[in-house]
Image 1 (tube, rainbow over the protein chains, first blue to last red):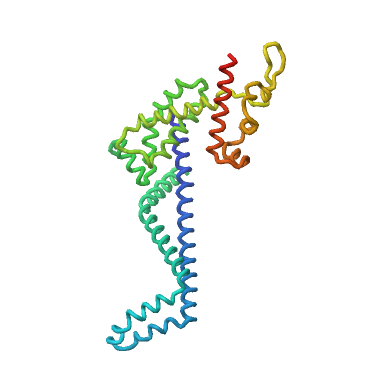
Image 2: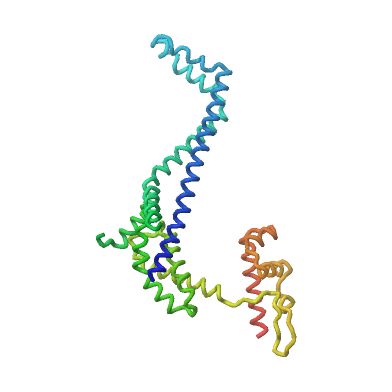
Length: 127
Length: 168
């Protein structure tokens, strides 16, 4: 009976190791992919804004506080209107997915940590 | 270690402490083993079934309500495993197998009267099933949804059943 119990436990550990490692790899890969694509799209947006000289709209920030107060709202609105909208929406979407993924990862962190500790204990004890 | 209740153990496993599962395995293996051993004719397959039971339970543990007792749930899994085992051992006859009638003549089951009650599409589906195709594969071949294939098979079976009943 002891032999059978050991066999079952070993199988469970092997299955869990495959599942946990697969989960970690896929989450890390997806996070890196999302970060890289967000950075790429962000750089494209900045490039477009540079070409349009849209950043000049914020030159007034070097002026007095009174001028900043008067122009801040209007210039910000103009800046938003000059943003390349499709790319901005894609960037926002990617960032939302990234935040959701990080939230899920943080929520499951304890669970995954405990699983890894259990797996480590098992494999180090068995050989 | 202080004796933990099943509820605490399940909570810990859900929290990722999978080493706790060994307590469940150790606690219930003998019980499950004896039960399956009494039900099976081939003793060498008991180990595999016991293993399947514990693996199925582990897979379902995320959805398992820890307030419920483990034993009835485990026995439910045992029943399902036994059902699957008996089903896998059930003798089946391929549509292409030669069948001999009582007077020694050979009967081709594909041209049998019973299959004559089916239309051509249903016949083709039954032939694919006998060749080992899954419903999904047949659905792809016939460009029909899986559920449609399932209903056609069900209808075909009813037709054959009725034909058998009327012949008797």
